[in-house]
Length: 105
Image 1 (cartoon, rainbow, N blue to C red):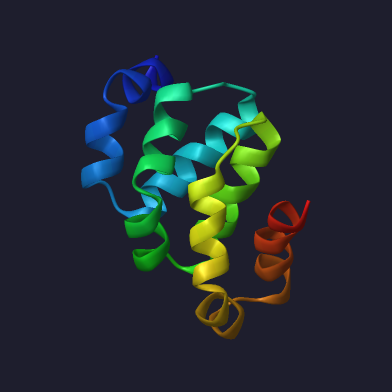
Image 2 (cartoon, rainbow, N blue to C red; image 1 turned 30 degrees about the vertical axis):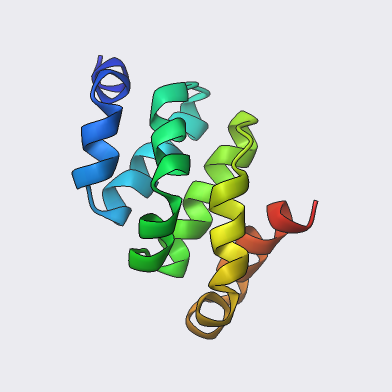
């Protein structure tokens, strides 16, 4: 299936993919309850680039997916905190809540 292929090629997918594709895939995993440890490990590994390049919506979706599937993502959350000013300035209230709910828990 598609998720097993994403898992198999997670490093390339996250390294070369755009933030929207990564966020949508992470959310798809979360909605279907599909743990994809390699995918989320790569998001964590490339957290700095992902947060710098992603929109508040894409980042919020990914943070929520990590939380929903129980993935610990300290690097991703640290980058959210680091870029908080931009994320709050550019994000909607719903995106802001999604971003900072997991960060403050």
